[in-house]
Amino acid sequence: MRATDFLGWALENLSPAGARFDAVVGNQPFIRYQYLPAEFQPRAADVFSRLGCAFTKHTNAWVPFVLASFALLRQGGRLAMVVPAEIIHVAHAQSLRTYLGEECRRLVIIDPERLWFEKTLQGAVLLLAEKRRDAADAPQGLGVVSVRDREFLSRDHDELFAAPQPINGKTVAGKWMRAFLDAGTRGLLDEVMGHPAVHRFADIADVDVGIVTGANKYFLIDDAVVRDHRLGNYAHPMFGRSEHCPGVIYDDAQHRANARDGHPTNFLWFKNAAAIQDAAVQA
Figure 1 (tube, rainbow, N blue to C red):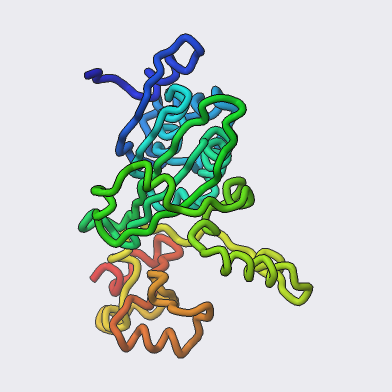
Figure 2: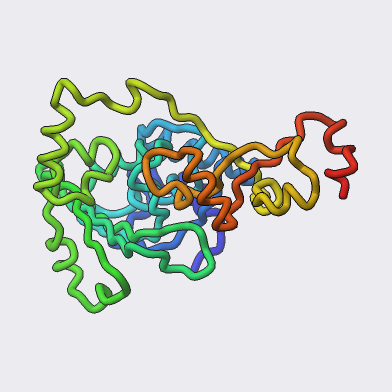
C-alpha cells in the first residue's frame, strides 16, 4: 500500500522505465480542475502533456486519473474505473476519448440506466478498457452493455468484452453517444443527417453555459415564495431541471404547467447592492 499523491507519483512513472501493471481498478475523485489544490493543478495538466493529449482547464480530476492509470498498464493490461456518465459526451473529456480510442484493443461501457449511488446527482458508468498488445493489435472499437442492476457481476469478464457489437470509428473519434444506438438507428441517423433539408442545431443556434448558483434552493423558487415575499421585481421565468422541459420546446403552456405542479419557475436576480437592501429581500 502506498499513501501519496497519485498524480505526482504517476508522473514519476510515466517514463519508459517506470512501474507498469497488469490491471488497474479504481473509483477516482470527481473534482473540477479549479477546485483542485494549487499544487495539484499543474500535475493534472502535466499528465495531459506527457501523453500528448489536449488540455483544458474545464477538465475534472477524474480525466487525468484515468489517463495516467491507463498509461501505466502493461501491453494487454486491463482497466476498470467508475467514471461519470458524462465521459460519453462532455467536451473536456474529448482528448481522453480520443486517446482511449487509439490505445485500446477493446473498450466497453457498462451503463446501469439509473443512479447506482443513492442520494447522489452524479450518474456513473463503468469504463472497461483493454490495452493493445502491440502496434499490430488493431482496435476493435467501442461497445456498450446496458444493465438495470448488478447482475453483470456474475457474468464472465470475457463475455462482457465480447457482448457488445463494436461500432465504427466515428464514435470513438468523437462523442460516444452513437454507441448507445443499435445499428439500424445509427444507419437511419446517418441517412437523415445526409439529407439536404436537415440542418444541424449548431447551424441555427448557439449553446452556452447556463446559470450556476451553487444554491439552487435559494435562487430557484416557486410562485408561492415570490407572492408571499413580494419578490416580483427580482423574479425571472426559468426552469431548473431538464425534466421540467419534457420536449424540445419550452413555452408559456409548459411554464404554467410547471407552476401548477409547484416546480421552481422563478430565478432570483439581484442586479445591485440596492436590491439586496430591499425590505422584501431582507425579509
